Each structure stands twice: as C-alpha cells, then as structure tokens.
Amino acid sequence: MATVALKSAEGKWIMVSAILASAMAFIDGTALNVVLPALQKSLNANGSDLFWLLNAYLLMLASLILVGGSLGDKLGRKKIFMLGILVFILGSAACGFAPTVFLLIIFRIIQGIGGALMIPGSLSLISSSINENERGKAIGTWSAITTVVTMGGPILGGTLADAGLWRYIFFINVPIGIVALIIVAFKVKESRDEDADKAVDISGAITIALSLALLTFGFLRIPAVGFKSAQVYLTLLGGIILLIVFLVIEKKSKHPMMPLYLFSNPVFTGVNLLTFFLYAGLGAGMLFLSLNLVQVQGYSQLQSGLTFLPFTVLMITIARFAGTLADKYGPRLLLIIGPATAGTGLLLLSFVKQTVGPDEYWTTFFPGVIVLGLGMSLTVAPLTATVMTSVSDHLSGTASGVNNALTRISNVFANAVFGAMAVLLFAGALQKQLTRTPLDSKVKVLVIKEAANLGNAKVPKEVDPQYRKTISTDYRESFINAYSGIMKISAGLGFLGALMTMIFIRNKTLQKE
Image 1 (spheres, helix red, strand yellow):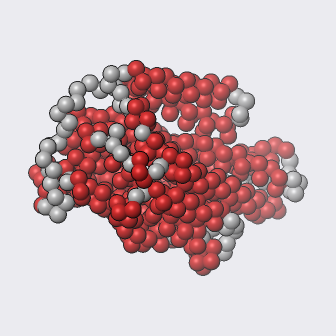
Image 2 (cartoon, one colour; image 1 turned 60 degrees about the vertical axis):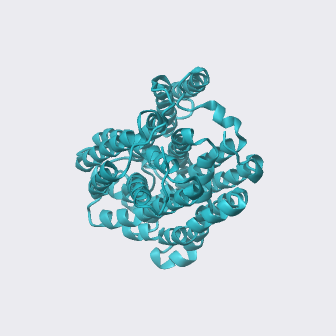
C-alpha cells in the first residue's frame, strides 16, 4: 500500500480516527478508577468485585489483543478496526445499563473483546499508512494526545460520579465510537499485509486467556481463603502451566499470534520488559491513589480527578517534544530517565500519610504527581515509537499487539497481585491496631473481615458504640499503611523499567527485525 504524508487530508483522517478510537478505550480505564467508590456504593460491590471489574476488561484485552493485531495484518486493518469499534460501542452501552455488578463484569468482557480488535488497529494503521520519515512524529502525536485524553479521564469520571452519573462513563463512548466509525468508513483506505497467510492462532488465544484468568482468580482469592488454600495453589499452578503451554504453542505454531523470534531483537525485548514493569507500577499507583483520595483523604471524586490535571498538562507540553528528541538523538537516555523519574514520583506519593483533605494537596500529593507526570511525559512517545520501529512494517500490527498486550497483562497482574497484597497489608496493619482495643474475639473477626472492602470498610454494627470511632480511625490508618506499601512496590517497578533500558537498549542497535 502506498503511504501518505502526515499533513495530507488522508493522513489527518487516519490520525483523527486512530486517536478517537484509542482514546475511547484508554479513557474508560482511568475514568473508571475514579468512579469506583460511587460504583461500589451504587451496586453494593466489595473490594474483590472492583478488581474483577477492572480485570474482566483487561483479561480479554490482554489475551485477544495479539489476535487483533494479527487479524488486522492478515484480513485488513480497516475492517478489523471498524469491527472492534462496533463491538466496543455495544459493550459500552450494555455496561451503562447493567443493573448488577455481575452483569457489569460480563459486559466489561465484551468491551475487552472490542478493545482487543480496535487498539492495535489504530497504531498499525498509522505505521502502515504514514510515510516512514514522518512515522515517529505521527506515533508521538498519537501517544501524546491519547495519553492526555486518558489522563483527562479522572476529571471526567470525577465530575460524573459526584453528579451521580457514573454510568455515563460508558455511555459517552457511544457517540465517540460512532464518529470514529463514520470517519474510518468514508475517509480511510483499506490496508493489509498481502503476503500474510489468513490463519489465526486460536489455540494460543484460548490458552493465554485461560492462563491469565486462573492467575487472576488465584491471586484475588488469597485474601478470602489464605495462601495455604488448595484453591489458590491449584489455580495459580494451572495458570503457570498454561502460560508455559502458550509459549510452547507460539514456538511451534506456523501462525503464532506472538512470534517469539521478535524477542531475539534485544531492543524489542527490552522495550517490552520496560513496558511491563512501568505500566504495572503506574496502573497500581493510579488505582490506589484514587481510592486513597476519595475513601480516606476526604476528596470528592471530582477533586480526586483534578489531582491528575498537572500530569495532563505535562503530557501536553512535553510528550511530543520527547518524541522529537528520541527521533533525533535516539530513545535510550529518555527511556532511562523517564521511568526512573516516574518511579521517584510514585515513591514520593508513598510517603503521604493522613491529610486534612484537598486544602493540603499542594504540599502533600502535588510534588509526587508532578514528578510522576514528568517521568511518563519523557517516556510515552519514545517508548511507543521504539516498539513500532524495531520491527519490519509488515509486522507492525503484531508488534503493536504484543506491546499493548504486555501493557494490559501488566495491569491484570498489578490489579490481581497488588489487590490481594493490599487486602493482606490492610488486614495485617488492622490486627496490630486492634490490640489496643478490648473487643470480643468474634467481633474482631467481623472487623477484620471488612478489610476486603479496603477504604470502603464499614464498622460492623456489633461493635460497641464507644469503640466505633476508634475502629473507624483504625480502618483509615490501616488503609494508608497498605497504600504506602503498594506505592513503594510500584516505584520499584518504575526503577526496574529503567534498568531494562540500561541492559537491553542501545541506540546503535535500533534495527528492524
């Protein structure tokens, strides 16, 4: 297929449609973090339900996004992109009407299927359609704008949640998706890899989906049944075995959805490891920061969303410039400094204890948010461009799929592992707090049981009135203790991402496989 200039009419329509569709998917995740407290109350959901609401979507995205990228390369990027948008719109509308938390989880799965077809399609359309000498700039623009919109999600989510309209987080996708569909249908030409075979790796997709589901279920069951439960051991073991089986399938398959030979390229390997660690830390950090602000620190959901505004401003002002610098000087230095700076921001946020609310934001959470935003602004565009330019053009959809899959898989693990860890840290801190309060052993069990609800823990009615205020304080302090631990681990993952760049990525080795 002949490529087009970024500034041409067709180039602009490709960018607009790709950005609209991607933003629709990405904003859903960050906005949902902020509305979780409102959703939890409205649907009477517990802490485990919240993590499943996040993971139902991410599981499907992580397991099928590789298939989505491959399908686009083989059957037509425009065709698969449009199908993904349509499925995502239908899933979003169903989520908006969901009357129970169980049905909402089911409809989130449908959203995930749509996203898996849609997200890699947006990047592969850009990579295969825009002139090679402008591709880095186009990808940097895509990264910057979609990240800005994504970070605007908490503000939108907070506004809607405070107004009692959290369902509109899902409904808003419908008009955006329809506009994107119309643009793609009438303004974007079909693009496919004519040399690709039409086979699809169904066995690989099913195996990785089951593996991730078992691993997620196992980790999320730990707080309820404990580490020594056979249920936990068997599901985690099953998940690990299926993960190994998936790798074997991919190695032997003639039509792998994740071609393992791509990882023989150290740049591709390093940038994907960086993606996994950094986005696991970022995902966990943003989720627990949002829960902390609303459930413990006394912020409204809009105020919680607005705390991320400095992050958004930095993305607008720095991200595209960082992409330009990476094109000119190479991405290595930026991909060391950026993740390390983001890790430092998460570490700063871990030291914030109980505050008096939004009035203290500027001296408590603001410094950490600024440093985190600076780190991500330096990272996002160079990271995406490095992924897409480390492979040949005909594998652009697959490369995008692999990198996006690792981002989602990292978020699945972050939600599952850190979700379980947070409940355990909360319960452990709470048990120490309760040694100061003379409660009956049966009542203590009820108090500790509320740890599963994290910051939304409620004092059981069985607690003597004279101790209710003390228990409420214990809940807040125990959550902050858990939050601090999670944020420190998230920071460590950011530093680990920078280490992956130092080990694997050299500017002179940036060559296509």
